Length: 145
Image (cartoon, rainbow, N blue to C red; front, top):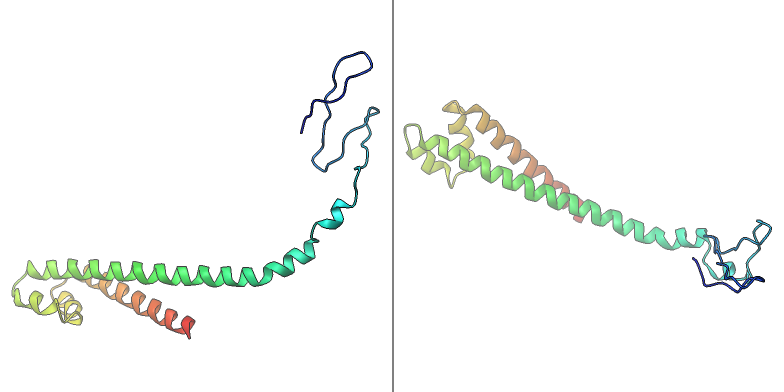
């Protein structure tokens, strides 16, 4: 931090340089000690800060885990719904179309009919998304208990 400074002996102003630790260099280039060294006693010690934050870090970690579980539930459900719609669309393009209509409300039939009609990639995505959704819901139930 620079200040206006005091007039020098020859009439010019000098700048007072304040170092980051609060000391100012003296004219010989050596650093002077602070005027009020008791200020350090007013600041909390690092051990006091870490002890005060221990409870906050636990709550922060719990909030991060809860957010991660929530994101996994939403993402897996969105993937599951998308895979289900893609599987139903694939079933509508094949005969008989009533299988697709039946698989809309009875969703496990979508995987069965999809595998039988050789829609292997869509069926695998559907099963993987369903398993991820169930795992995320079980994780959320365990963490909330």
